[in-house]
Picture 1 (cartoon, rainbow, N blue to C red):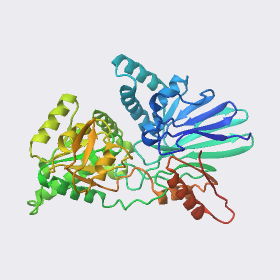
Picture 2: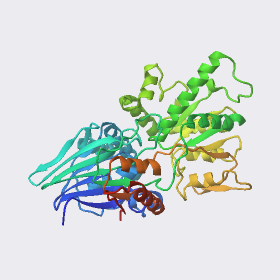
Picture 3: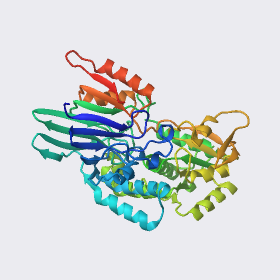
Picture 4: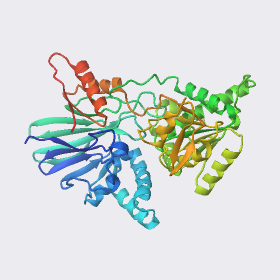
Length: 475
């Protein structure tokens, strides 16, 4: 067998569970991500299932980013005996313990001493790496391997991984895309394709579609809020704690700042339904609050425009109208208050697909009242409560949903605001592959239709005289 050899332990049948092993020789390998299969991809008991592969010889686990579909099987990896380093970017090194702590409490144990021991164990293994610098992992006669992390634009700290392998007299460079971000993220620096890739392992989440232009996203958010709150109700935004919540806060601060400047210039225009200066923005997610705190500390990793706001004395993720709800008792008070009063408010609460978390209590309290509105800003997986509510948008007649075993009528308004995808679309994926002049492309992390469509687009657009491109779908 000729090395290096690539094998896959997840991320081949759908859009979750990314886990790829790069074998350098018969006894030495690297693991790129160790993610959990979720939603329709997941088998029963996936969170506690054994790994299904041998950890012997794995020199390092390299993490592209800290979403659970890329890191959620780390407990199983440790249970299988892995004690090597967990390599990731410097922001990911701070975010990873928060994400794994939350998952551990939900699926394994919330006993404080046990959680503390687990987190201490994890932190001892984490090795933060700076972006754009080579790091040697293996160096011995016959094989040398070094890796480099580059910004992937998906969320704070997300990276794609370059693996440069010298094997005997042959040099081969593998690039693992992780999840590539869409253009126009308000906080993050844009993705730059790698300088070279002999083998590119490429995500394909949106390989069969193009995103709408994101340039007017903030204006559409502002107009949607005006419409939603004209009835003096609450606007509920289900959002995941990591990434999407911080983008929303950043754009809400921008809207509030602009409204404040306009109010100083004169009275609000006739017909403006909102007093924006008094509008509470409620963040009801303890995990999102902790993650937002890390984002605020790591502003050196923001893009230039976002950092310039800090230089102006603004705090895009900690503005004065932002109210953070911590305890469960306080959460219940807020739910009851907003249900019974006529004061407009915006609530951002987890989780993003309404399948658990604090958003469920808001839905139980408010779905039956047409004063309120649910705004979706992200993908809703088939079969989730979020997908059912989203499907009721514009529906006529009597629509109900099952929440925690009880039926609730959907009379609240429902809308979906596009432009918030965290993944690159087909054109951006093709541009990434074209930029590194890849000779072989392996498609992962996508539904079958998306992978087939992207494969055809890559073959068509990358074909050049004298440059053969082999595109395969991982199995």
